[in-house]
Image (spheres, rainbow, N blue to C red):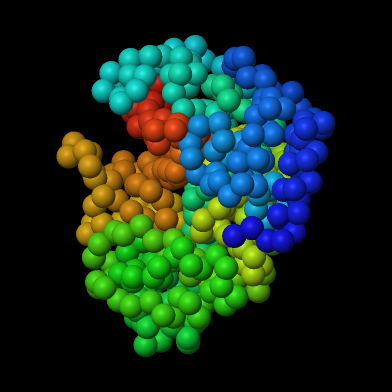
Length: 412
């Protein structure tokens, strides 16, 4: 996937990091946040050198541990990215740390670290950063394995930027999610996508067999998508598919007339009060990689995006997230029950990993990136992580649910 330009950059960095260990900075923030401090000091010169040597010798970054964490924090060194400019008016987040959150006891049934306080858990588990925002105020923030100003990959957490983009166009009457995707792309007629409603694609239940790994290097992704076959009626079974996200990304671009990164900058990133620029992965053919490599941003800015779904972030005359969109997220297809715990139902909707019956929802990505939102409790929990070399990730999506239902955030 690496271009010639990217390879030349790697060679320069590989040679340069012997004498110049300074990390490339993509952030413009000058604020000094208050957060739980640990003993993180960044990557050593030797660790940087080892990473570049590993990549130049043909090694993969998806190996867990420090090598993968370095990649998560420095994706522009190994892949093509475009910049998404920050807001002209950054949203200031008040800080009022609460000991009840810091000392919250996790349940003992977690695979690792069960029974620890939240603060101890994120230090011992595979967590890079965690932020909890209640009623628009930061009540906990900790960075055990990254700096607050680092741009960290979202990976497939970026999918919900795609579904949010669809919702914005839907609110404007430019997309009708009840229509089949081939209504918008003639090339998809007589393919596996023929007759598949956009709403079923938004819930990852298109029923197609699209092989997604090959799309990154192709020149015309929509032609590749047209080779898909139908393997099941749409809307009957949830099946994780990057192809579903890709076709929705292309739909955003076609209807808006903008590249996906320009649409996100104009309609989302610039309006949430983002404090720093973000990055969006770009494939070798110039198309957005929102479906796979995704975005990179600071943790606070990911939380600011989450706030757009809560009462605290939906003030003003034209909120990004409409009442209609929140209702549609919760209007789940009951055929798409993805529950593993029989005590609590979860469903797939609008590319969110899970929507609970009480209206909370979250998105989870490989390695432990995630965003949990409770509109009713005006609560946002965002986190970054890296799987260890045994491919174990944190259980922060489980802990987020425990926090949300603990009573600590019940509104008066």
